[in-house]
Amino acid sequence: MMSLKNPIILLAALFLLLVLVATSFFTVTESQQAIVTRLGEPVRIINAYDESEVYGRTGAGINMKIPFLEDVVYIDKRVQDLNMQPQTVLSTDQLRVVVDAFARFRITDPLRMYQAVGTEARAADELGQILTSRLRNELGRQTFAALLSPERADLMQQIQSAISSSAANYGAEIVDVRIKRADLPTGQPLESAFTRMRTAREQEARRIRAEGDREARVVRAEADAEAARIYAESFGRDEGFYEFYRAMQAYDEAFKDGNASMVLSSDNEFLEQFQGNVRR
Image: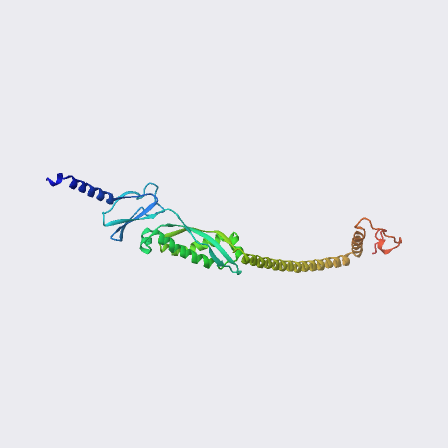
């Protein structure tokens, strides 16, 4: 009994009690998930991600664990950014394109993530390698113009879908994949690329013009043939009307500038329509 009155023993007992209390309780915020491990083995998960969870009814708050035997691994519950280093990709039109992309992900299965890689940092590294590989493969199948067009959004959706299954192996969900920039390297490669692109566009323009000219000739030939057929039918039905129509065309062509002068005899064949001399 006398030993309990010793101040040193009381202070030591009080200190031990405070340590036990401090190591027995831990706090999990709304933005965190927690894995409680016992001698390195996970035993329970607190505040795990759940799409259907109701606000205010999560496992966040003060929790207990066995001191010295159990540890807590905290995992972010929020959407996180996954920035990538710029990658050089060879497009299908043989252009070297520098692509700067990023992704956003969240840990949806903390237990699988912990068992697969152990920490969030290692999970992000693994996801970055997967995303880089998939991005290089998919972008290498596209032309440079496609990377600058609205089709890029569909391409990013395809990449996101492709890596979702791989991300699930690390307990993660890919929320979004985006290209921030897609540029040609500066210097001589850029000038050479512009020259090739200009040459390709000029060749395409010449091809389109040639096709347009060919189609125009076909249309003109068909129109002339149809006009000839109509003229022939008109001539066969009413010779006088046909001669009148052709004479009107000749008059229109001769006097269309408004300044033409002609000296002809009154009985000239060219003027017979003005005189009402229509042959029957």
